[in-house]
Every structure is written in C-alpha cells, then in structure tokens.
Image 1 (tube, rainbow, N blue to C red):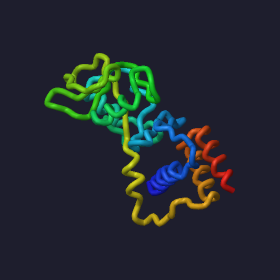
Image 2: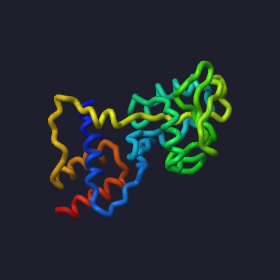
Image 3: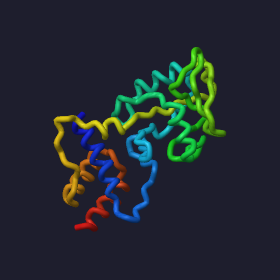
Image 4: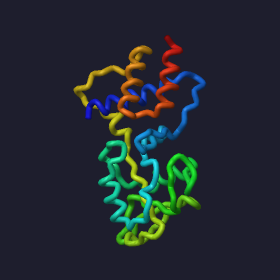
Length: 193
C-alpha cells in the first residue's frame, strides 16, 4: 500500500514537472482499462459495464469491480458524472466509452436512484428497479492515496533527472502509464541531462 501511494505521488509530481510547452491532456488512458482525469484526480473505468443494470446491481458491480488491479471502486456521484459530461464525455464520444444514454449515480431517494444523461446532460431520479438503458461507470478517487501517504514514509519527491528517470521506469514497469506517455516523459527528462 505504501509503495502504491509513493508511485501515485511520484506520478503526480512527475506530471507537474512537465517541460514548458508540453500540453497536458486531461484524460490519461492506461493500458489496464482505466482512465485518469488529471483535473479531478478521479480514475474511471475506460468504458461502461456493457449492459443495462438496476441500481442495486450497479452498486454491486462497482463494489466488486477490480479494473487496473484496484479494489476500491464505487458508484460515481451526480456531480462527478455531470463534470464528465461538461468535459466532453458524451454517449459514444470522448475518452470514456459510454454506450447508452443513462448512467447510474450513487445518490438515492427512497425507491429512486440518481442517474445522469450522457446524450442531453443533466441528472434526474429513476426507480432503482429500472434497468432499461441504465449503465454504470465505476470510479475511484486517487487523491486520497496521493494526499495521505503513510506517516512512516520519508521518501522525498524525485528532484534530479536521474531520480525522475527511475520513477518513470517504475511507473512504466507497473503499467501505470502508457508506452506513449513513458516515451514522451523519458525523452523530456533525457533532454535535461
């Protein structure tokens, strides 16, 4: 756990140290079926679950989801889904594949669950038992890990190009960054030497 926290923290620091002029993409796709939203620190499944589900089944799907080797996935909040829509994630377009119009959200109200529309935008209440055209996109918060490393950890963030090269090599080995990201970051660091 400590190792993973340090890796995530190093990744965030590495991207913060990008060379001037590097365009920072908001959504980073990993080769493990996950997408990191660098603006919010949320990691998303790269695609919805692929079939319509009732709200209780959607909640269970997220709870048992293990994409990217993580086991702390959950149903997204309405505000998180609305932010995705605002960022350009729509049905059949954008960095995250959403193949139907409605996606379940975590909020509930008696027999209803929240859902967000990825065709027209906006969120509303639906009966939890409905499953027609309702999908789920699991999410997890990477900020908690990056902000709260173990108190016993005294590792300093990578400062020298050599240290940053070791970090980028580790991130690549752990498959936390794509091959393209690895090559771009490695080339930028090597240019500093």
